[in-house]
Amino acid sequence: MVANEGYIKFYLSWEKKAFDFKDHDFHQINLCRDKLYKLDLIEAYLDGVGYGNLSIRYHNNEFIISGSATGNYNMLSKEQYALVREFDLDKNSVRCDGLIEASSESLSHAAIYKANKSVNAVIHIHHKRMWEKYVNILPTTPQNAEFGTPEIAYEIAKLIVRDSGIIIMEGHPEGIISYGKSLIEAETILMNYYNKI
Image (cartoon, rainbow, N blue to C red; front, side, top):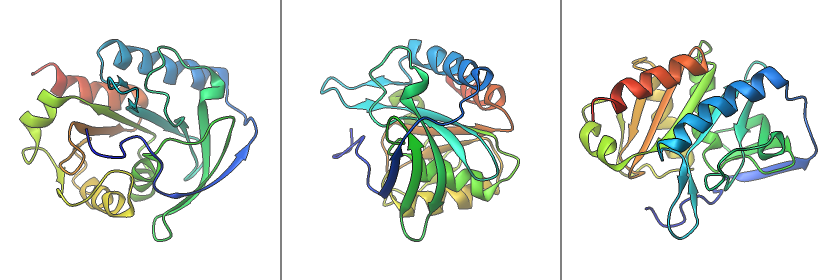
């Protein structure tokens, strides 16, 4: 695990209020998250620091993402998701609404949504064996690009043009991102590689 894992590294403007989270979207994202949680792809380390998150596009560049430090919860409620309304990669900033702060990986998700308008869902998981098998085999961010920083966000955006649907984060040990036109597509891409392990 990387030092400071799970902590927000960007400038966060957070308005603590509920947002319009439609039941259909909530059930879809929670169903996917439940499957990933049962496979230990989203969970928490022994020290209690959670890992893994997922998001869906809301409007244009806005997206709903699981909240900060929610990896150690089995099932999430609507209150444990945040709506990222604005982000700025250059300024390393995120503005969100919700009853919880947006995930520490929000800028990585934001970079994908900004780089590819056809992407509507992003999944970020941890899996050591899968990471070791595919690092520098599948599209991989550089080792010096740390999680939760503008550098990793820019490197992820560069890899989106290859449109493989999956990215390995070398500077974020165990970290893997999948993305797709839908949550089902992002999950299917991820599970196709997972099932080869």
